[in-house]
Image (cartoon, rainbow, N blue to C red; front, side, top):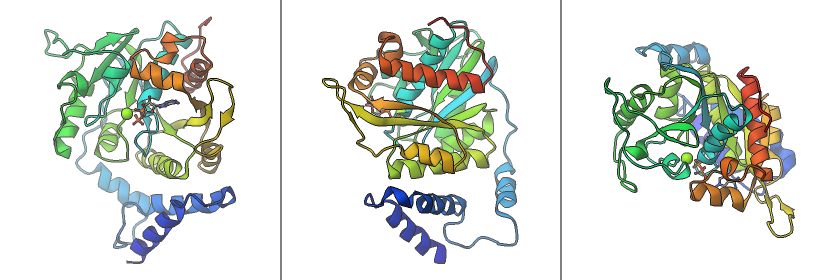
Amino acid sequence: MASVVQRFLTRTIISSSSLPASCRKTRMHICAVLASSHEDPLGIKNRSKSLDEHQKQQMARGLPKKRPVDGVKHVVVVASGKGGVGKSTTSVNLALGMLARKQSLRVGLLDADIYGPSIPKMMNLRGQPELTKENMMKPLVNFGVPCMSMGFLVEEGAPIVWRGLMVMSAVEKLIRQVAWGELDVLVIDMPPGTGDTQLSISQLIPISGAVIVTTPQDIALLDACRGTEMFRKVDVPVIGLIQNMSHYVCPKCEHKAYIFGRDGARGVAKEMDLELLGDVPLHTDIRETSDSGKPIVVSQPDNPQTYAYKMIAGRVLDKLSLTKDSTR
Ligand SMILES: Nc1ncnc2c1ncn2[C@@H]1O[C@H](COP(=O)(O)OP(=O)(O)O)[C@@H](O)[C@H]1O
Ligand SMILES: [Mg+2]
């Protein structure tokens, strides 16, 4: 039971917002301990086998072989441990940022958040997908990006009351029973956490890389570490971290305020040997454009926040070895 006590204590310590920045190393150590003890919360594991070996064997048992999505060259998942840190906003603007960087690219967007789909609203799309002759769903398209979401299949605001297995099955259908056409990149907007959906997607299809979104807050960083560790355990390369809401910019005087702390993700990126792909400020323009279904990258191409997304998109494309050819 020692590990239960340890977890309780460390959680309590980490969530204390009064912890000074100088304790980051300690926090990260605790974080690593938590991540590595995750699959054995009660401390009853057979210690004779190495943790990784045992876990990999368990995960491989009975799993289908990874199979690529027809026509899709690269899958990039946008994830975080926590909800509300800006995954969906980032996914949308990352996909559109890729297009802005390289107009010849074909980029699709899949909303894998079954319980809380956001892509229909953010991409200003509604309606049911039509079916092809082969009974595949046609993605809905806006701003040049084909999209698929659970939100297209249920009434807006209707709750999805499903158990895990049904969610898994739905996710697989949203990936495979869609006529995506030829895509260079499929961006997947993940639900929060490190649960069934993340694991199933990681084990169903080859993923070129995961982008982890976090805010600079301790509590979000801790979950970002968990997310990173999960992807590493299932052999999904982590492309890097995006520090969302890095600071607040006053729209009147342009003053910068570090509401959620300063540069927390930079420290974590260093500790976890990850690249920090970029900072995105907390800015009213981002929130307003997302809410109104006119993502900032397309509606305000010269906004400084758009540049931030385009720079991040460029870095992700570099990592995928998809060269730039844009004049924009
Ligand atoms: N950089 C940002 N600046 C302003 N608002 C943001 C920013 N990123 C996200 N938001 C807003 O925060 C809320 C949560 O973002 P969302 O992308 O839905 O998070 P998640 O998908 O992680 O749950 C949304 O209202 C969104 O418009
Ligand atoms: Mg979301």
